[in-house]
Structures are given as C-alpha cells and as structure tokens.
Length: 477
Image 1 (tube, one colour):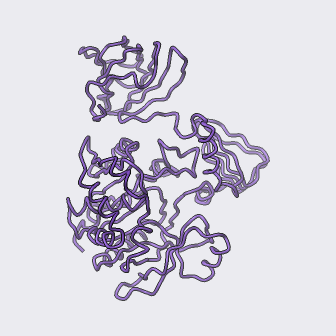
Image 2 (cartoon, rainbow, N blue to C red; image 1 turned 90 degrees about the horizontal axis):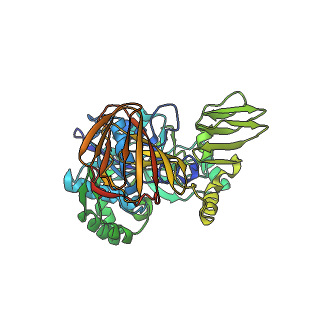
Image 3 (cartoon, one colour; image 1 turned 120 degrees about the vertical axis):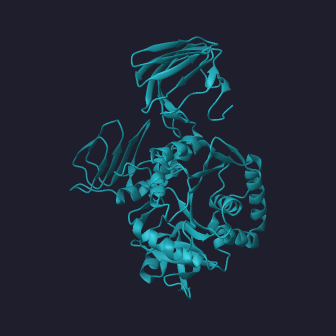
C-alpha cells in the first residue's frame, strides 16, 4: 500500500441527544471531553489518525452551526491540514460519506482508500483499530467495502448488530455480511451473544472512494445524482467548503448502511475488539467510568451519603445526594436531570416534551459560541445586559455598529485592541472603553492568551440582530 494512501473521513455532524443536558444542539457530544484525557471525543478521533506517515490529511464533515467550533478544536491540537466540508442540512451518514468520496476523487486520487470514522466514539485500544484498518485497507484495494463488527461482550440493546457470513477468501479475518440488524430487544440480544457470529455495528468503513461511488450509482442512483450535483455546487470561504442548501434539502436522509451496504455484493465485515463504545447514553458513560467502593461514578463537584450504584456528574454546581440507588444525576450548565439508570433511554422523550412546552434553555448552552470565542450572559433586563466575553488568540469581532445600544467594555484578563471610528487603542487589565450607539467598532485579541472582557449594554433594544457588519474575518456578512 502506498504511503499516505489512507484518508480519514471524520463524521462530526451528530447531536448526541441521549447525553442531554451535557450534550446540547450548539455543543454536542463529539465536542465534549468525557474522560481525563483533556481531549474531546472529536479531538481523540483525530489523534488516532495523526500519524502522517500512515494517514493523509483528514476530511471533516460537520454542520454549519459547528464549523467554527471544529476549527477551534482543530487549532487546539495543532491540526492545521484538515479539509472541512460543511453540510448545510443534516442528512444522515450516506450523503456525508458520498460527499467526501466525491471530494477525494476530484481533488486527490480516485483509488485512495477512505477510512470513515464517527467522531463521537470512544476507543480504548487504538493499536487494535490501526491493525484492523491496515487489514481492511488491503481488502478495500481489492474492491471491498469493509465495516468493523465490534466483538460484543454483553447483550447490548442500544447498538445495531451485524451477522457475520462466511470467511472472505484471500483476506484473513474478514467475512461476508450476513445481514444488518436494527437495535434488538433484550431476548434477541441474549440470543445473538449465545449463538456467536454477531458483532455490534460500529458505523466505521474502509473503502476506495471510487468504489463507494460506483456502488452508490448502482444501488442508489437517485442519491448518486443529487450528491454529485451538491458536490458540484461547492464554494469556499474562510477555510470551509460549502454546498448549496436547497439542493441538500432535496437529498434523502439515510444511512450509508441502508443506502449502499445492505445492497452491495462487495460488502465485508471484520470482527474487531478495540475497546469500542459509542458512549451514546448515560448508562454507557457510567460503564466506562471508574467507580468508588460503593459503585458510584462521581465526576465534578459531588458529595454523597448512603449512595450506591449511581452516576453523578456536575460542572460548577455542588451536587449533594442522600440515599440514592442506581440513579443518574446530571447538573450541567443551566439544567439538571435526575432519573433511574433503567429509564435513561427515555431522555429523548423528555426532550420532546420540553420542546413541545417551549421551555427555554433546554437545547442551548449558556455559553454562546462564536468564531472569535463566545460569551456568557450574566444579567439581562429590558434596558441593560451584561456579558462576559472570551476572545481567543487571534480572534476578533466584526467591524460593526449598533443603532439602539451603547456598550462599555472592561478588560479583566489579557490585552484588548479596540477600534472606534478608525482610532485604535490597546487596553490592559482594569482598563475600559465606551462605545456609543452608532460608533463603528471592533474588539480584537492579538495576544497569545485568551482575552476576557465584561461587556455592559444599555439601550432601548438589545437584540442580537441590532448589528450592522462592515467587515468580518469569518465572512458572516
């Protein structure tokens, strides 16, 4: 196999609803750090394919809402060579994989082997993954579309399954695919485990880009045609590749399994034990967490008395628990959730009820992410608003003005470069600047550490749409 023939395709478009309230629409599971590594699941996925002697620069697919979050997390781990394809509308894994395949065949090499990896999974044995990828890549060069079937160690009902077929001639360790199975009930899961020959569906694929497209053209020609049109509609802006939103909206929402793998005669499955979990629920996260002598997993600020078998997680708030058994307690940002472990599959039902009730703050974090950093609203009323701004190194808000509000900035950390009607001043800690209504202004961080500013807004209208942008480094005009 040629050097750098393996192209990682990282799928980062999920929403991770089952880990609410920690995972929310604007900051979903893949961008969270859920262990003591200091890396988000997305960053850990990239770390597994960081060896440029083995893997080429990655291709990342994400939603438009998360594109700047992706850029920020890439910069934090020093990954500067990734290509970011922005999906204007979420359409499951098939369109994402095929868009990446079109990109590879048009910009790199048609016979390049793509390694498709969801970015919200945990893998505790990365060496086993790399060995499996190398084996699968050899089969991919012979025209096979390979997926990994995770060796099950429990009758899990939260995962789909793959029934392994006959061994694949000429490719040790690989099997034909008997069938794909949706998430089973408990009786069926126990039967699969007892019978053997089944694996959990990992959602990972290793295949040549041209082969993936050819199989799609054969088995899902309508999807092939519209994905080609979407690919041809691309435009570039601020390091991202964008696609036509209306065309993407016409595309069927379907997984790559359903669209291609269930129909192709070139599908293969490789059973692998790599310490894999999709961490798709609080129970799964509990299973992957260290426990105290009472069987509790306590993350963050928590104190317990007569508590056993519980998963307790908190951020800034202190959680104090008494007399709980086999419960999940999550205090995250602006919401708290409590329930028995055995009913955690009902989190989505809970979210649906909250959406139906139009409850505020159920789907967004209190920190509003922006490409330059973001802010937390500290206080708000009809005529004033107080925010804590974080400007990342190199970050700068757009050159803008407001018609209905004044702003007052106080630097509490770092050095701020402030532009007001063309005049530039640098402010240090405890220094401030006043921005009258109608003033053209910009706040910028030219230093190597975060800039923290307290912003006080006053006026008769404080909406975010009272912004007239004249210049923007992130092409949001």
